Length: 131
Image (cartoon, rainbow, N blue to C red):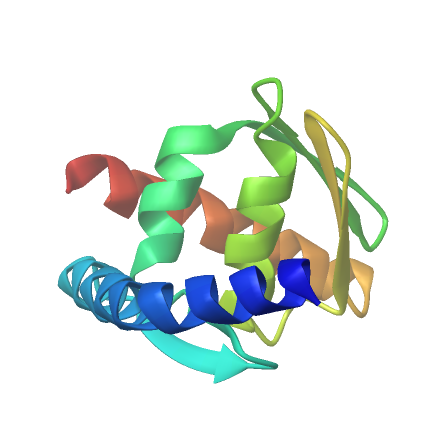
């Protein structure tokens, strides 16, 4: 009974702080052009397409195309970050992504669209480095 009472009391005391923290986080994300949603009680940030150029410029090292697949190389620990940015941008040329530590596999519907996607990613990376 005692641990449950302490947990309930802590929840009551911390709730206003958590609400203020979530609000501050949402404002900070909005300043960076992210919009937030609440899914299952947790805050989730959704990246706008305008952040993809910056993510590509910052994390992308190299792009190689093999048929309808692209292999994107990043620095150590950065592939998943770039994968999230690509997934959330919802580009029509991307069917799906699989991210490791420093390598990201991007699958396009066909080889022609994969070629177009390479050009688009390189263009977006250039735009991101200009900002």
